[in-house]
Length: 447
Image (cartoon, rainbow, N blue to C red; front, side, top):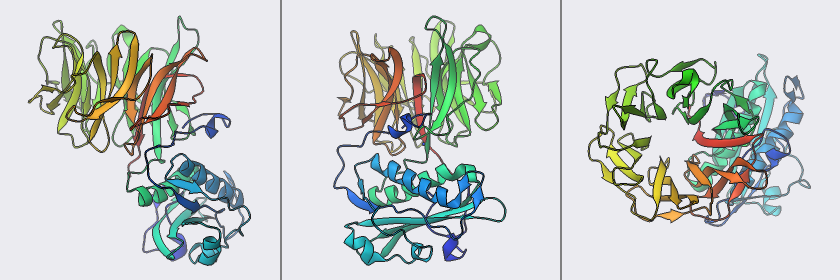
């Protein structure tokens, strides 16, 4: 996806061309739960995109794509309660010139506050030019514009990015819809399951597998650039960290063969990986550059230290340790100094994950037979449990820091599944996947 220069003609610069969850059309209708704590919703119109000429492409005609893109943008925006998508089926579809010069009285009479209009055109090189504008209908002011030249197969990502143009302008939050989820997909018999690293877009589209399933895999983690995934694998008989290239599928071990390692986490710059490694009976957290230099030991307490996770600025690492007698959450500087405990509630704590805005940490809490997910401030204050259990764990943040995705046992299907809840609490909603799912990790794309 190549951004169009802002010096290009207006009709090529229209707002950003327009990843919960299903790999099937039926499941694709079920998406992340709205955040119930947000303020008043903005009424937005998303009419069918315009096209200067109906042309057949590898993904269908430009007219068909114009309808599909508008539908996907609307579906994205409906997943938050910051928008009410207006019913515009009785409003005349804007002409191509009206994309850059909307008939605002028409949209005011329809009761809308915002208008997201756009176009999709075929190019001579086989790609598409897709663009969108976001307007304030009441003032007639343009709020955002973005545009892209894309392969026809990338129209879905263009639609997600168009929805993000409206979302970020209205909320001030980070982009949400142009994001991907990795997880461990489990199939086969319970006594000998096949586990593979799977990836999919925010809405379940573009689902694929990155590993073959010939060995058990756990805890996938995106690189900041989202071009690689680190994960733990039992291939060769020893649990160890591996890296897989998302585009090519090229896969290799992080460390020399024979070394046990697990629970990887990329640094925010993508240059280093923190992980756990047992040496001489003690499990500590280590860090190594991606290039494979000798690992640097960061912890040394007589305990099991695991589940490291970098803060977004890269200055701190949260981790779990049983050095106090039971697993609790700790934070240290990224060089291993200044280690301090931050969890003091009931039960045991694990799986700490820093929010993308750096303000909070999500975690798993275990009390007796009850396992739930929760959040706390980065200093350990204002702890709150978000799910009811009994088997909820492995939380991961949405790119806008407003939702928590996690795994739980689905009693109806008798399998492990994914679920989502607002970071402020509320209704827990299921997230459909084509097979049993564990170890989710959600990340926003970066240009």
